[in-house]
Amino acid sequence: MTQTEFTAAIAVHLDVLHNLAAWLARDAVGAQALVQATCRQALRTIPQLPPGTNLRVSLLTIMWGLYRQHHGLYADGLDDKAPVQVTADKRMLFHTLSRMDLDAGLRQLPEALRSALILTDVEGCPLEEVAVVFGWSKPQAQVAVAKARQLLDSFLQARLATPTVLPAPEEKDSL
View (tube, one colour):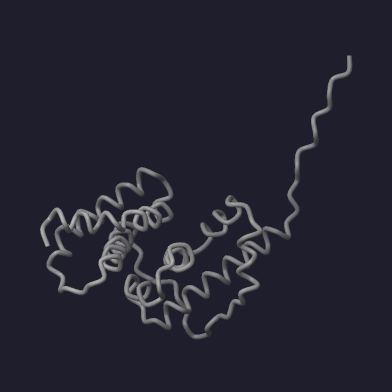
């Protein structure tokens, strides 16, 4: 594969890379820098990978590695002793909330759990790919996503239970 063909193959996955980078970096400049660093490293390392390697997984793995390295993250935040079950009814909660509430809930999650949840539930990545990206086994990836859903659900339930105080309507001046 030529350098141009390889660059075009990377371009197919830029949306997924940028979406994850935006959640990790939390600002547009940081997200763009993370995507660029990922692409630079990919252009140096991936062409040497054996044929049949999943490019999306390789790119996401590079991005996660760069992010962890830059932020000094080494623990995965997993406790896989007790798997967590979340019913489909609980997931319906996500559709009743504003984007702002959902964003606030996602920001409460540890980085690895938030990223795993975004890749599976937002980007549609299979658990097998998520496991490879984070260096987990498939059961660990299942636990991570379930734990992320449970933590997010707890936060969002608490947020819904908290009454919202609306400002009093302004009274019209009567002349």
